[in-house]
Length: 190
Picture 1 (cartoon, rainbow, N blue to C red):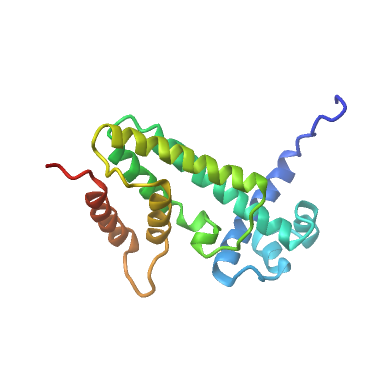
Picture 2 (cartoon, helix red, strand yellow; picture 1 turned 30 degrees about the vertical axis):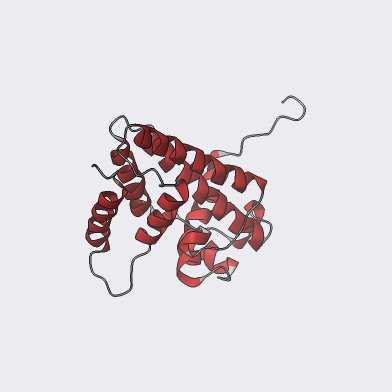
């Protein structure tokens, strides 16, 4: 291997890391960021040593959860921006994807831990760039309100992806609110 080249983890090690992240996502969302690391290991079906081999500290694990969540948000923003139809349909796609993926997010706006570093800030900025491109296209076509910002979409998506307690069939209810929201985002025609 050339000097300085990063060695790829074994497939089983990579699979274990993903199982730990999946288990941690579920438990942190349900029990909070102080959930015992042993509980995460047990839920993932791995030993505690496996957890610590991948994440030396709780902070490292929480950071990885937030980073992975922003990568998912970025994938959703890219897909929405690449939507070939009207920009309003791209906005719908972004909101629907956030709703679909709500159980996979461990982000500050979704009730997750507040963890930021330059890599996470870069992902966060790229999400905004893709959403801004979508909005610029829709605003140039006269389909979207001129005052709409990426932050508007991010906050709306976050709110829609957090089910209210004691509300049955959240997906249906949130879908209706997406429709209502999109009606308000459309440019007003004279």
